[in-house]
Length: 175
Image (cartoon, rainbow, N blue to C red; front, top):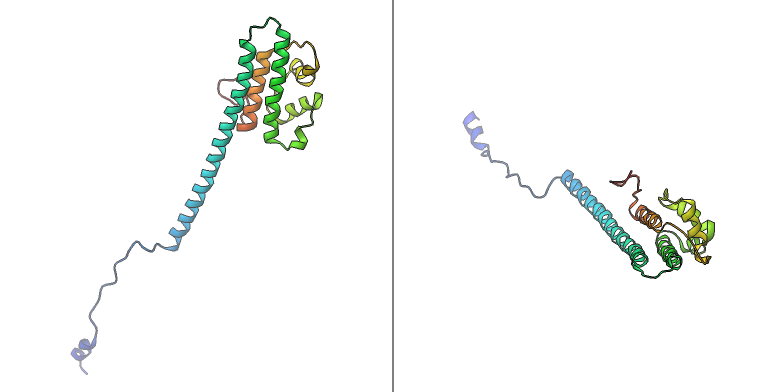
């Protein structure tokens, strides 16, 4: 056998098949799964934050409605107006607490235990002795003198800290 016969027996050189983008390599599949998982996780976080933000805004609007009723009232008896505001304030704060904590832990609280709960669970650095007394025993008094503006500010800060986790010291514009 000579070399020409051997060369004749060889097959022609053929080009490899064209490299396509589909199906991707296993590493790309893992990256896609991780990306989809991250998108689902972030979507749920965003939806939860959006829901809590909406509920927080509703609770703050309810608190503001109570304050506007107090501020816009033309009654000459400021003591009765303050007692009504204290009761409405307590009602809003208690509903917020019932949303965040188990009912059996919150619903039965009253007096000093209620004030201690407010101090312990949310941002309440504005809760002074006067407001604490009004929250614990104000609804049972015939006359109660409390700084309604400070109480309203406390309520806004407490509600915001529970829903959004912001403290008044962290929020922009507060010192």
